[in-house]
Length: 205
Image (tube, rainbow, N blue to C red; front, side):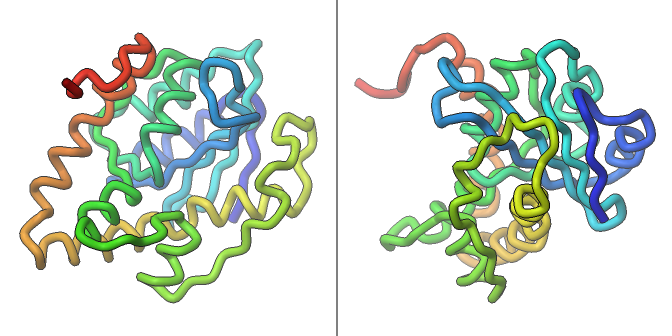
């Protein structure tokens, strides 16, 4: 199930997502640098709500998207959360709470190994799920009407995040790193703050 929204979530979609314990989140942007590029889409997914795709309009405040990202009662699962949180904060000044990141989970799990921690690779490795990226990945996400291929891409980026996180957390627990992982996730909103201040790696010598 897909629902497209322009400028912000609808009230019904917001309430539905807010009632969930855990939701998947992702963004599509015009580039990789939050200082010079723009947020184009924000996607949310939960099994009971389906996928909600918000087309960003800078003339609108995105109040409901921001409220959802800031809601402590809902766990927001990203893949490469530092990237998404940086764009969300730069766009709407979000103060994210209760976030998780599947890429960080994978890096902790495979810390002693060299692996490809892309979403596509992890889904294939951990769940046997094959998703296609292709050229749509770098398509124009600011177009007024998204193509079917773009909608499908945006959906698949969030559709499998929750089972992937569950799988990775089970594996982390088995090697005694689940608590460390959760503490890493607790730090992610702080990381977004230091990124916005262009402080670099404040832990380096």
